[in-house]
Amino acid sequence: MVYKTVGIIGAGAWGTALAINIARGGTNVILWSFDGEYMHFNGVDIPNNLTIVREPAKLADTDVWLNVTPSSFFRETMRKFTEFYNDQPVIICTKGADSKTHKFMSEILQDELPTCIDFGVLSGPQFAAEVASGAPTGSTLAGTKRVLDAGRAVLNLAYLDETDDIIGTQISGVGKNVMALISGFISVKIQSENERALIFTRCCNEIINLGIAMGAKIETFTGLCGLGDLFLSATSRTSRNYAGGVAIANDITPDGTVEGIFAFDTILTRAKKIGIKTLILNDMYKQMKL
Image (tube, rainbow, N blue to C red):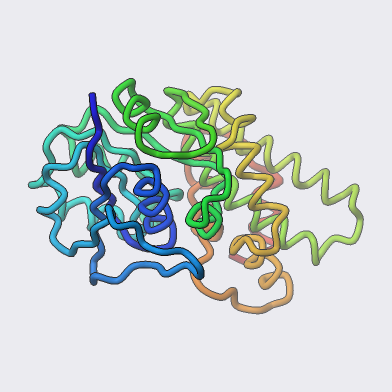
């Protein structure tokens, strides 16, 4: 199939970056923005084949959808688009889980768009500004054959890990937010580098155990959405979650949205529900007073 036009839902930093990168690769892009605004990146121009719209109906005839809305608005936004869905493969580019139900984005998509059988998840080490600037970027794309075919054709990324492990890819995305938060916190609270490594590794193990119990593949956690994203977020002071952990350790309220705080509750809640032990994660949660 020829993918002539991509519809992107959400014009925040990540949605705009993806839109610019895909359009730069030659595919037409229609970018939906709730208020008509989009993210501006220094030194990066909007390609001529990228159109910004406010009407969901404008995405009805596109060939593939990318949903890039924040997790807190994912369900609400999906409902706006239900009547305009025409069997496009849907790629979820939102990392995180619903703070109230603790559902992952694919589960919410199935709630709101039950006719969609071809859906997937894009996740990995992806700082939006670098993607917008054209820096080489790799990601994991998980989904059905139609999703993988579509992603391969339009995403215009340097490298794609391809898998059918949708749940593992999402747990990796949620878990890395938790681990970045913890990493920032222990960088302040714990002076021993040995102990930091001990805590970090055992927390990672508990998250992986949860993933395997939910049907994830172990190799997903060593791929770009797992180890790759973990390296980017848990070692970078520009990561919002790492910075959030540092702020919490210093008794300062973190700036902006820190996804790791909500993700932490999701990981613990879902682990408890299916009987996975999270002794070290529980201890860190208490220490951080979340």
